[in-house]
Image (tube, rainbow, N blue to C red; front, side, top):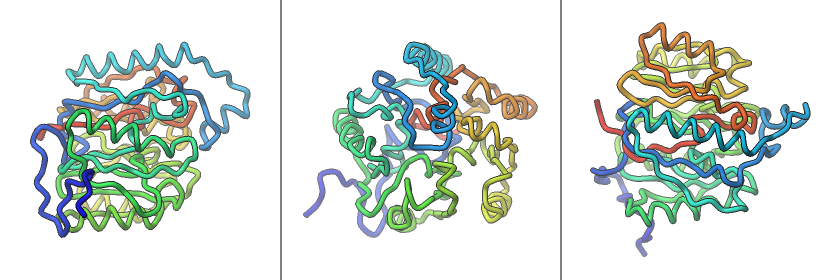
Length: 302
């Protein structure tokens, strides 16, 4: 029986979408899906939030909403069309729309979340894609798989990390198989669960340029990036743990990053990139940053 949620062709050769989809994290961002801030509050499911909760740092929902608005203004300033997931009280971390689905050239993949308070997010994101009439590529059914571990380095090359928790070996192998059937290289890298997702440690900034916390990523990943001809902007460990590496490439040599990510900002400016840097500190202390809060719906090749 053919699933109504599956655009993927068994064995590969799935037709790319025309109005939706992406082939690279650094192509020109035209449309983005953003999670709702309505019910956001910090949870102790990651090292960053646990540290701030243990220190007694107070969460202020009003400031979080204000900062969220600044981020949306930055997208609109960059001529990016913003669309939103429906808020649900039982989904406090749905603001991090990166994790519940991932976009591919052939449509979105619906993920399977690890944390108990996020497991229902698959329904919210599936409802969005159905209402927007965006064909779903497929749904992860093996283990766990979260979008913060997944990125399209360039056309034909995907990178995905796994800690064994938020993305499990079973989940990553299922998605890897799909991409390899489509003729893509799919490179996998294991890392310690302390770092939550791969996009806390490594992320594409512009074509052939990545921001990487070299102090923590495996040497094998650094070697692989070098083999791909990708230059590295080194992000200090302290900055990375405050989501300073968790940024969004807008394409056309533009980047969206947190205001507090000063070291990366200076490196980007030195490379001639245009930087948009809203203050989202009240949000990042919960364990997610700019990259976590958005899922590209359409990127246009340069």
